[in-house]
Length: 207
Length: 86
Image 1 (cartoon, one colour):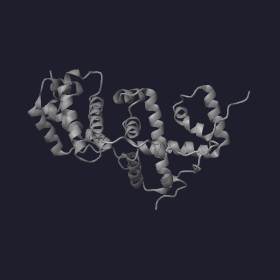
Image 2 (cartoon, helix red, strand yellow; image 1 turned 60 degrees about the horizontal axis):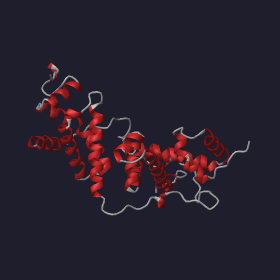
Image 3 (tube, chains in turn red, brown; image 1 turned 120 degrees about the vertical axis):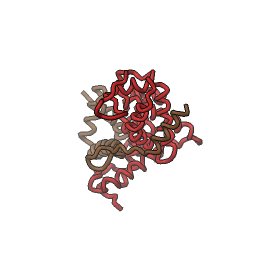
Image 4 (cartoon, one colour; image 1 turned 135 degrees about the horizontal axis):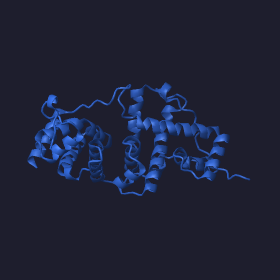
């Protein structure tokens, strides 16, 4: 039975277990509490994966409807936030797959170049990101650089480094082996480093 | 005992495994030996770590403020209306 906090007013369920019980029982105000409680966070995830357009909102809506339909399958030992996070990521990944019209560019052109003797073509140099750019400007440039990664690498970087899934979870979500996830993550980071290097090397880059 | 030498190219291949402490002892020794003798790879390793940190922070809210749970009302209403239709 769904227990509500007497003093908290309608729609406030005592804890997550009470909210889940109310959702399973089909309480209208439980649905509303869930949506109000999580829509902002899920929209942020969807926007990171799909950008600012309509697709991100559609993904959130589809994720909630999918969650409502599968409430019976929610495991009590998981957290609602983790469960919803996985659902919205899966919906966003499906949207990304259906968006893909042409074969993606190989990542090789973005990886560091080497001389025949195994030395780098360009010296690394020291980075001084904090001195070079204002934080917000820097964040914008990093997001733009992540957007330039080939989709199959960008997705792995997003799931591992930004959404903080582990290698096994990422592999399961993308239908890849853990070894492929590791290789793609490393290459995505190398490519991202190359894209950021001209702006961050030796503190140059505010131009 | 002579140690296998890594080139800068091979060094780069092992960075992630080094940071995740997943290198076997022999490769770890070679990696550390390369770091000792190649200042540019020291810089490279540092810039790789910076890249990971910058990626992780790319969507963070400014300052120490938590990410605002901004909930667009029309999205809430759209979800609830869609649920009633199903």
